[in-house]
Length: 187
Ligand SMILES: [Zn+2]
Image (cartoon, rainbow, N blue to C red; front, side, top):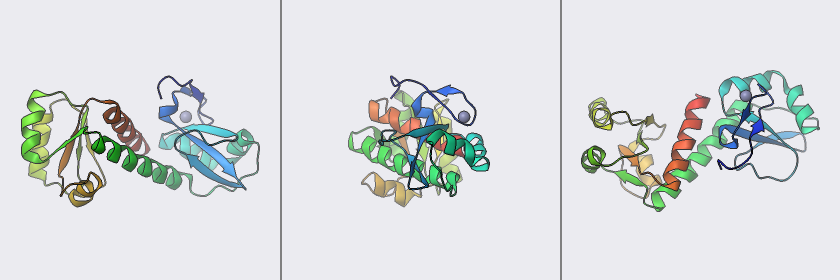
């Protein structure tokens, strides 16, 4: 993804790598988020940041001009969040399947102190005590509190309930951390 050429955000005109942007496409007057960035047809790019998405929401003419088509704009922020969530779940299951996730509080306590990891995902219903403990071991590793419960997190990675998951340095692990950062940027 990093090797792809930079694109210009239609809201702020900054040039960014596609991994920090959403591609928007129009189809019969509706606007869709093309999360993989490879749908055919004319597309427009916008930063995966709430400020840029809200700017387009307020000024849909900017998007219509970029797409060269009349559009009816629904809640773009909602669509962007949904697209991010779907891509996050895909990245999470891929990382799990390729063995890039380490789970189980006891196992985490052991591996986090001796191996470098890209980040730590923490479930939405992890207890304050567990979170404090994991934060202490995680050191300066990025910690991402996700919207998934322990049960949901475990189900998505094909295991029992998971309080937290550490992300190993690998291609699928890196893709997952990139997705987590995108979700943070959207708020
Ligand atoms: Zn922008």
